[in-house]
Amino acid sequence: MPSRQFWAGISIKPNFALMQKLISIFIEESESMKHVKSVVPSFVFQAITADEISHMSRNGGNSLGLSASDAPILIYSFTIRYSKTEGGGEDKVIEEGGKRIVERSERLAKEMGFGHPYIYLNYADISQDVFSSYGSKNHRKLKEIQEKWDPEGVFGKRLQPGGFKV
Image 1 (cartoon, rainbow, N blue to C red):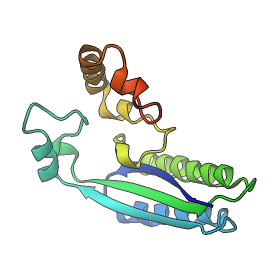
Image 2: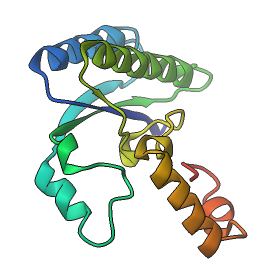
Image 3: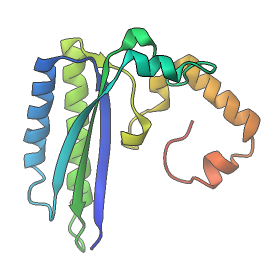
């Protein structure tokens, strides 16, 4: 059977104590998945620096809603690769565990005062509201651009039936 993958991510302000607790949450929740065939849970913290944000903003602004004053930001992303077996129910186990990691991590980061609303599209789970994390002004601007250049939804709906929608 082919391998499958669950992806998700949140953004935080750097804080060592928070990062240690996020790792503990990840390990705790991964325990509930260890019986799934070929499961490989992994995570990474990736920095977004003020310099990177300023480069993003050079030519007409930054649709992600990030400003240099937000930096540094850490993207905490994780993926869980696994094998699906005939009638095994792995998707449900992995999806529920992954969503618990997101919910617990977001809640903890917010409680500790180090949460950041930005969600990196490439690492987000389909249940996460990526475009709202860009801020209402940027989300509205992206919708206006889509309506102007793709009023019939050729690129945003028909040619891309899955994924995130502006």
